[in-house]
Length: 249
Image 1 (cartoon, rainbow, N blue to C red):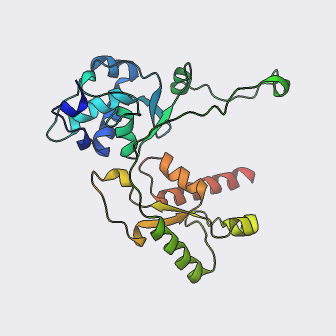
Image 2 (image 1 turned 120 degrees about the vertical axis):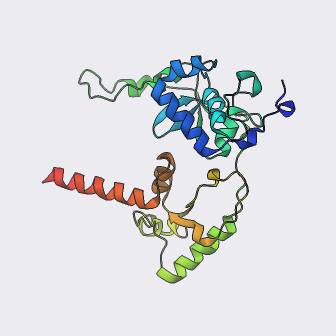
């Protein structure tokens, strides 16, 4: 059944509903979760949340059980998988701000059950001389993403901050690109939406107070740790630093 003819408004999917489905999947286990609701294993795209990996289509289908006016698990035939078509499982998650990652055949099981990195004295560096991969082939990909129009606002925030403080430093770790990289780092820093756009089902009004200037590292960390605020990240960084300092004594 084509999505456009379905009775379910797939745009009603919300962040809280997805998180409840994730919790159910973690509680029941991946295989039990998907089989219980009649879904197959994801083969190409998966949802990465708080360092764990989940099948995209089962998560979306079950999430609708927690969406008002729907209140039931969608059948696999009511929406598509993948990410390249509008309102597919991956595109719905991506539009809400979740991280959807593409895998190659054979990678999936390794990702959901990763082996820890351990030091092995039997492993030498000979592989550096002969291991190789082929990459760089042009691939056309289509992604449905949230419209962003805050670039000019971010630029004004940077100029205002630079005029007021004389530098552009990360509000979490105080990293200053210009101080570290010289002229190449002048004027560079990233703007973070304090309230993720994915938490709203509609367009939102963004003001300067809704943006924070952060370095690339802190920006990545706050997004990969779902639900973490900049204050949370500051605390985590400080605790990690204090723990490292204590271990050196």
